Image (cartoon, rainbow, N blue to C red; front, side, top):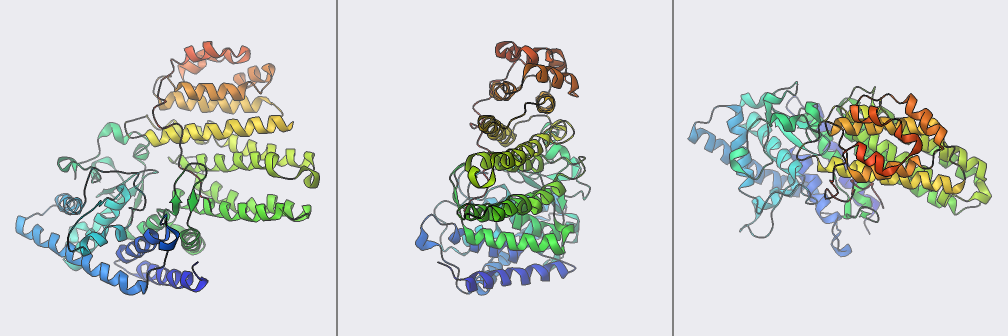
Amino acid sequence: MPTPSERQEALGFLMRHLKSELASDRPHIARVSIALGLLEIPLTSKREDERIWPENLEAEVEKHYKAFREFVKGVHQECEKKNIETAREKIKLLANSVWAKLTGVFSKDVLHAQHLGCFTPFLLMDKLRGRRQLDCAGVVTTVFAASKILESDFDHADLNQLCMQVSEDHCWLTLDRSGGRLGSIEITTDRAEKRGLVVDESAWKGWLYCAGHGTVMDAKKALAAIVTSINPSIVDRPVNGIDSEDMQFLQCKILGWMDEHRQDLTYPNSVCTLADLYEVAWQDSVDKAILTPNGKDLKVFLREGRETIEALFQRAMGNGKQAFWYPFSYHAGSAVRFSKFLVEKCPVDILGKEYLVEIALSALDVGWTALGGGRGGGVLKTYRFASGDEQLYKDIEGLLEECVKAFEALQKFGGFDGGSHWMKTMLEFLDAWCHLFDGGSVPSKWITMIIKIAKLIPQEHREKGARQAQVASPALQKSLTLWGSLRPSTIHQAFEVLQLDDQGEGRRKRRRQR
């Protein structure tokens, strides 16, 4: 097992370099990203005996940085040889040079391939052999880090305007600091002829590109992105996965420092990631408190322990004018899991049924409300489902599955009130799906799941909720009267349901676990 001193040494090294780069007029992301890769790869090994900390991390980082700078120097020399002058063409050459070191087809879901430290080992091999892959973040981070070295060390001043742009499941580069489509540079395709091009207009309207509102990041803000991209997964399964506590520790400490001292670097995904990490720690505390007979201590954990988590989610969701779905999805998922946990795992004899119902109902209400028309549903309306948006499909479906289980658990516990506001929010969420799929056709499985929830609500409250709902899609406006009688076959027909069940069985990005 790693010692606290090893953890602190690595954290100290990372924090020194992070603060140094943030204080610089010409910051680089290379050393921090190399260090994260050199830590994450061994510490997330499936073999416990291989989970060891690198010896002399600082020297190892410098060795990898030197090799990377030589790689960038070679690209610089090729720029001169080919007389490449435009920034876009230079970025394309950089991307092609990175891709030349990789093998096989592109895989955005490959694990632990997002840091520069996942790429630099390829530069130190005597012979390139075996599988060599990066995910989309790995490609973009590597090219962006190289561009900063080209700019500062080899006088490519025209790359000064280059930024990373990040959505919720993708990233690319841009020459437009306002984030416009015409400045975008897509480099994550394994087809060389498509690298360096502007993102297609139809794809730009989809969720993958955040409907054109991805976060634009200079080198300093990109440091927050590469820390956010840490993946502590040892076993990556949707339900019973296993995470590296060491990588969780490093990520939580660094993001926590940024949140306290440099909130200008944070963005919705980084804030959600920190909330997620705090939820893991909170859950550990609650699990331990349940084993003690002191109900007072447990109540403190259940109420006060979630205040920081809730505050982070609220900040990530912002004022409702942002274009990110995950803050609402993560918040809703956290809240409905909390509700289900209360009624299924907490001791009734210690806490009392009335107390558990009160806070479980409140948590479910918080989570469900996050999906309504003025919240998460409003964000979904800004997208048009496009090729590449499969992860959004999986996330919505997985969230719905969690919601159904939470509603049914509270109903079984005898605490669901069945009020009309549940129906109102549900229909506003459905209205957002109709806009997402641009015309009213929505996935059959989703309709089936919300019908399960609707059945828990009395008919008079379903009818009242349908009258209260603020909906705009023609398909839903025409079907509002159907929700009182609740005939599943008729409702399914009303939405000309899409059969999209091959998108991944609702396997949303799993929550972090020990």
